[in-house]
Image 1: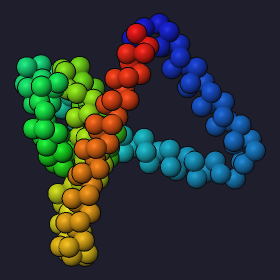
Image 2: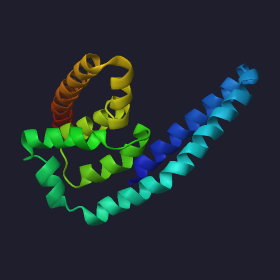
Image 3: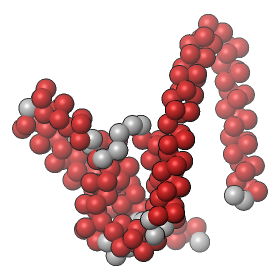
Length: 172
């Protein structure tokens, strides 16, 4: 990490800490609720984070750039979009688990559109969730929502990639 980026992160952290202290001074009655929520999230992160790091490490070691490039990279085409959707439906758990995995996939040559599609599918489409949705809301509702979600997740990924590539080119 570059020195400027590290400094920027410390500045952001300092602003957050100062804002938190300021909020506690203005609303001291909220500090107990903050502590409870903070420690709940901290425990959740500590339970999940080691597994995420192991998974990221395995991805880094065992999945080559060639494989990522072939299935999720610039030449993956429509197949890459579908693979990104399917891969996104498999994992359970909160979306922040995906961030280290997406970073590894990006470093190995996955297209921005496929990464956004993967993350969006992870957030919106989970196989166990679909089964519960089917049970409570019926096949017609589930199929409609699922179809529209997949279509718009793919469109969003493609648009985001164009925007991302456009801003990346203009800053070079």
